[in-house]
Length: 186
Image (cartoon, rainbow, N blue to C red; front, side, top):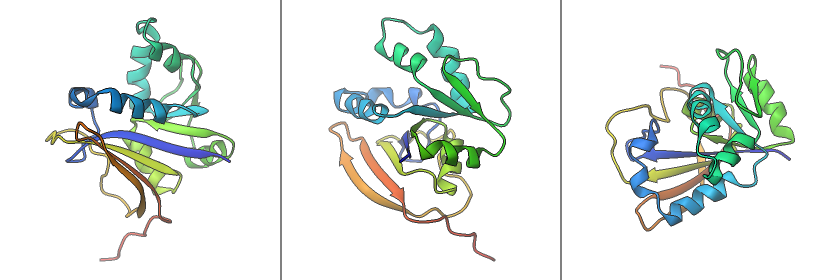
């Protein structure tokens, strides 16, 4: 049976954009092990267009001595976009059109994980497709940048676990509590 998990670095004020600017000071052995666990055991990675473009610009030319380079380049990837016309990064397939139907089909036989891709994660949450949402909450207020949650439907979640790392980072794991609520009539 398939499964979709999503892991995001997030600040206390909900920012997920450009975590390289604020999360690295918290990257220690505990957080590195957590990231490793989140990345292992998946059949493929789901990426939104912007994250795909950033990763595809970096990883193919990254230092081959870095073990992450081989992992990122050789792993199977699906980029979800209705604006991208081709995906040229090694082992990448483009999903477009009715992406929710396509992802629902893909999920049946695959363990998928998103990385970054806040717009994609919001959409998956709204359609009840994320089985586990891992928020890695950093003890910092960034004050600017794209946030994970924007205006949209109410999506009830259930907390599965919470772990405080020595650095003050919190690892919160949620699962869907049901279908998203319909917007209230005003």
